[in-house]
Image (tube, rainbow, N blue to C red):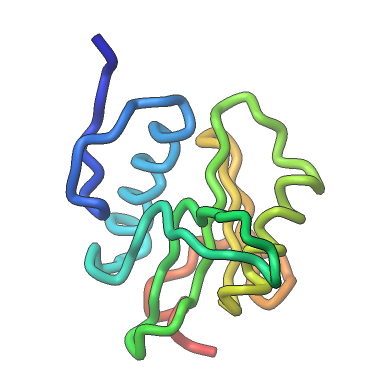
Length: 131
């Protein structure tokens, strides 16, 4: 029997893959450490890129108080190196979303950038909304 986990953002049980485990952990980080209200996040947000018919999915989007995207989060399974390829994926997604913050994580390492500049501090939800 497949293990599942409740995704509070999608409001349903989903398969507990290694990447999903990281996604659920980071949703809790966003909520508990950064103060992001649950209703201002979405997981597995589908979109298209340019004229491509291919569907892409942002792991987590955080929305500001005006409901515009303020952060794009790309989650990878533990052990996946957070290299330039992962960063480029997040940057491509953000070309569509236009958020000032990008976060990439594998559950062991997390990198956070604001307007292209990496930061060592964990921003609060108010920080995410201030630009």
